Image (cartoon, rainbow, N blue to C red; front, side, top):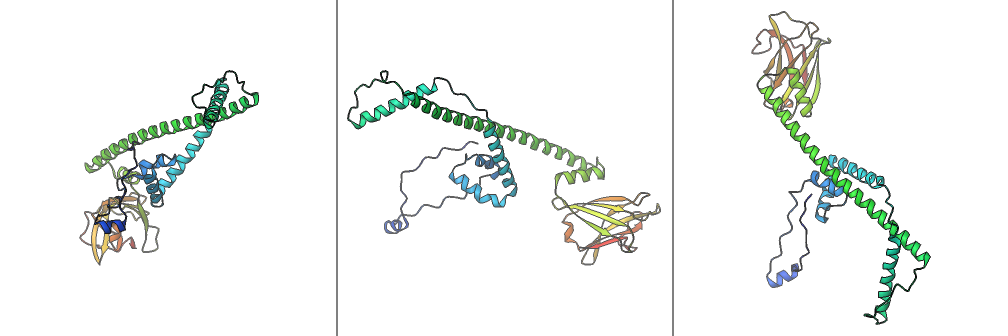
Length: 312
C-alpha cells in the first residue's frame, strides 16, 4: 500500500486565548478520514505498517466490521507463523572478529574524547582482543543477525503473500461479476429454468424463508424463500392435491383485505410444484399469503378456500 510520507510542521498554531487577543482564527479541525477503507488497511494494520491516524481509525472501526476482526486475526496468526517458520541463518565466521574490533574502536574513541585526545591516532593492531570478549561479542552479533534476518524474511514473505492475495481476490471478484452478469442476462432473456434462477439467487444473495401450512390440518405445505435485495420470491409446494388438467394453483398476496395474484403453477403426480415471483417491493410489506385452486388461466380473485395460508 502506497502512503505519502508525512513531515512534521514547525509552524505553531495559536491557542484559543491567543486567537481571541490577536484576532486570528483557529484552523479548522482535521477532516474525518472518509476515504479510508478498512479492507485495504487491515493487512497493513496487522503487521504495524499503518501510521498513527490510520491505526486510530482502524481501531475505531473494528467494532462495526466483524468481518474485519476475523480477517485481522487471520493476518496476525499468519504473521506469527511466518516469523517462527524462518530457518536460522549461520553468521559468517569472521563476523565476531569484525564486531569486536568495531566495538573496541568505538570504546577507544569515546575514551579519547573524554580525555581531550581527539585527533591523536590510536592503534588497535597492538591491542589483542580478549578471548572472552570476542566470544561474547560474537554471540551478541550472531543473535542480532539471526533476529534481523528472521524479521526481514518474515516481512518479505508477508508482503509477497499480501500482494498475491490481492491479485487473486481481484481476479476472483472480476470473474464472479462477469459470471453474475451472464446469469442475469440469461434470466432476463428467459433462457434458464426456474431451478437455475433459484441457484443464482441463493448463491449471490442472502435470503429469508418461512413455511406456509395447510388450513385443514392436511399434509400440504409450501416453503417460501425470498431475497430482500432483489424482491425475488421462490415458492416450493409439497403434498398438494393433484388437480385436473383444466385447473391450476394460484398464489395470492393479501394486504388490507385486497388480494393480488402472485402467479400460477401446477404440481406433478406427487403434489410437488414451484413458482418464482419478481415483486416490486419486499414480501413482508404484505399481511398474508395464500394458495387456492383456480380454473386454468387463473382468476381475478379466489374462488375456492386456500390449500395453505399464512399471516405475517
